[in-house]
Image: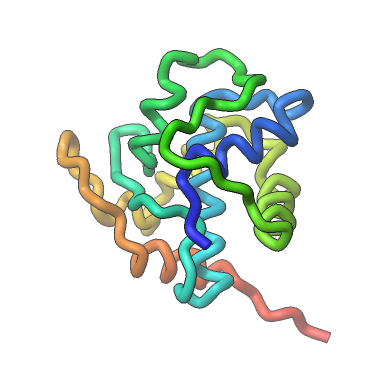
Length: 154
């Protein structure tokens, strides 16, 4: 099921804001990283989010999420973000997935997570042109995260 990006962000805020130092940048990057891993793990058959990420100067962004939290600037977000577009409930399976994303990436700050999305060869880096607001394709995101999947050897 594809969710509004604010729904995914609110999951992180609701569950981890007390311990996670959730700034707008961290929330935006966690949401994007979750989106990428979801595409890879579902073999691009399902999307976590119903909006396309855009390549902005500071990395991949879901515009509706950015505009919902930009007033926080660099301040910590501790309360859920108003989500006027949808009143969605994340499935328990997707909650487990988001908890795994937090387990791996939650200890990092927004600046570090942003740097991860800017590394050479990332989907953002492929399409970014200053002031162009290019859509980052699911195909590029899928290919990038798919390469990070490693088979478990016994």
